[in-house]
Image 1 (cartoon, rainbow, N blue to C red):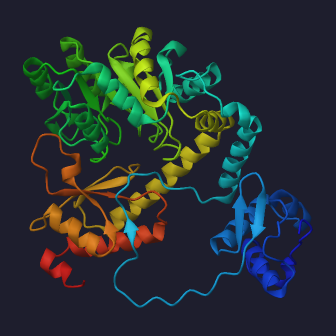
Image 2: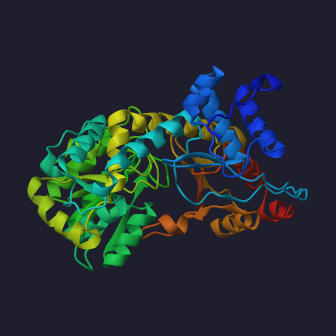
Length: 461
């Protein structure tokens, strides 16, 4: 059905909705059949005399209704009409919402999705070449893309210090294994990223959390720990920290770097969220490049499935054992994934995705601020999550259990605590595939719980 041309004059609805309506109507009338391939979006737009975006939105709306399916590199195909859904029973509970994973919001703009698909189709032109083994660390073209991306954070290292790796987790694991042996100590924030806790535990390392204030780790506490514990490294997640959402200001970063330099302690900088703020503080790798192992993952600033991270080592010689450790662990980063990241960086798609993530995150944070009780949580306008500090008599176990009973998944503070008694707090994530309205429903239910005691809140179950 490459010649299918809907008559938009038959509908007074917005044109993109009319396109989806007419797909359903023509399917019922037999003018379209299951398996028919619809015209390419650009060709149909020219045929109808409308913007490409109108047709793209119409196809996305039809896909949302289950009328069509998009196959990468092949086109858009008609599906069977979906059966009417049974009317759900009335309930005061929100729909099931998993708010446990700290992911960026997913794009829903048809033009942006089309642009992403174009990039995927473009790298597929060399599909056979991308299925071969490649040397660890990335070829020059991918390192050039990494350099261009890192320059947004005031980092301009030579290529010999840049390694393209299969995600931040393997990179952190490789760095930890190089810097410390089983039984030795790595320092971190008292409330820290759970992935670092897991990696340290797997390697048999002693992860010791340091006291924090609103600006991050106390430099004096860091100095005392350096003098008494002989740490092998300091691990930091310094921008939009997961889970507390704090960003260490430049002055505190400089103070921590000065202590690290005095005691000769390497810094492992997990800059997962460093690209989210348009004008954030400089990374520690720019303040103390000779001390810092910088890990710039793309999962949070482009998409969690893009398992690629750029690692900047303190000096070129440090890259030799790092490459050997990562090669033994994972052989290489996926050439397909890296090629897609490079393509999106080169053609501007990555920047467009980053702008979308910033805008949608800010909108969700504003919604949370409007719904939840004032002072009940910590957040940044650009963080993907909230750090909910529970009022008495709520405990973290009671709150997580109450939310779970209603189909809302949140994570208790126990998962983030390094060496201290966990505070009565929980992480609540706002991103991922959850639509904004589902987030709103979950937050409204959460606000009711926080405004009442556990006994009263549970009475609505």
